[in-house]
Length: 121
Image (tube, rainbow, N blue to C red):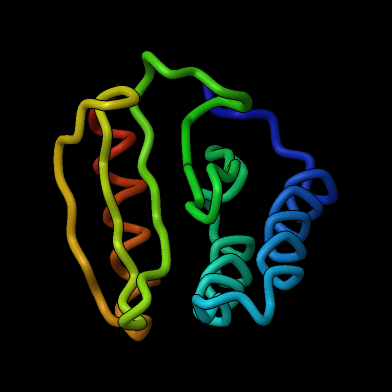
């Protein structure tokens, strides 16, 4: 059974994350690519079935809301060199796969990591 979709709630969820990164403007890291990525994510069909949180500056994506350290998730963070670092985790502390991409590849990489997360249920 799929997630119940409430477009307004789902949209607000992603807006709050964008606001978090926008408030970090002026930090050592440029979060503009993360803000653009979140804008794109909010418009995707899969946005209603994933949940975002933050861990320091990293965006963490899971299949259910809240913090579940023993469940799979993936993270995305901005590096000082401008690349975006994506990591798929089996659980907190147990990395399965990682890649670094330029912001131009963030959308495709994010979608691939959503697929990998879904396949690992």
